[in-house]
Image 1 (cartoon, rainbow, N blue to C red):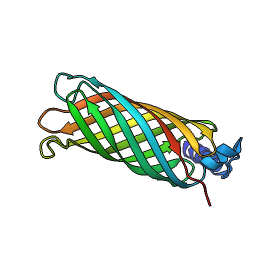
Image 2 (cartoon, helix red, strand yellow):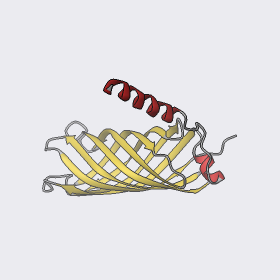
Image 3 (tube, one colour):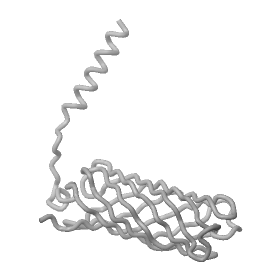
Image 4 (cartoon, one colour):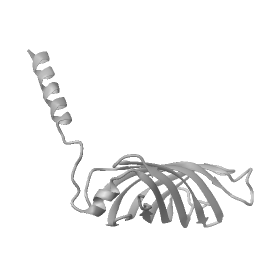
Amino acid sequence: MKTLLSLLLLLVTITGAFSQPDQRLARSPKINYDWRPGFVTTGEITGAYGLGLVFDEFSKYYYGFTATAGYQFSRNIKAGVGTGVHIHNEGTLFPLYIDFRMNLNSQELVPYISGAGGLMFDLDDLTNETRVFINPLIGLRYIAANRTAVTFATGVMVSTGGPSQRKSFLNFKLGIEIKPRNK
């Protein structure tokens, strides 16, 4: 009897999930445009405070700018590559990374999760100061106009490599996301 009830509950759940409409209606044309696949560029101002051990080089804080060029595959999924500059307390690092973003379903104010990872280079010493990093984030996007959204995110960036130990940062990003016109 328990097995039959469990299978019935599973069937009702699956049926309910697949009966949801495929094409949701947007409240305004700017949101409808935001849901379309296409090329996306994102520019972000970033800053971070060091966590844990902050007395080593490159570990107390950083601020900088990053730019990502990517593609929106569906309403909710974007991926791209990016680069930028991070000015740390002891020098400057240049990140080169892959960025993945997943928007959650919403209208004008869209929550999202993001993950970035790649390499950070110190151009003064490429052999000893190259670092690997990951940066998971959570954030909000406000769709401001037809092809423009403002983003704010926070997360933890962890880097390792170089002559010293792992570095961890609580970072913040404020940016603008732009999509070109469809022809």
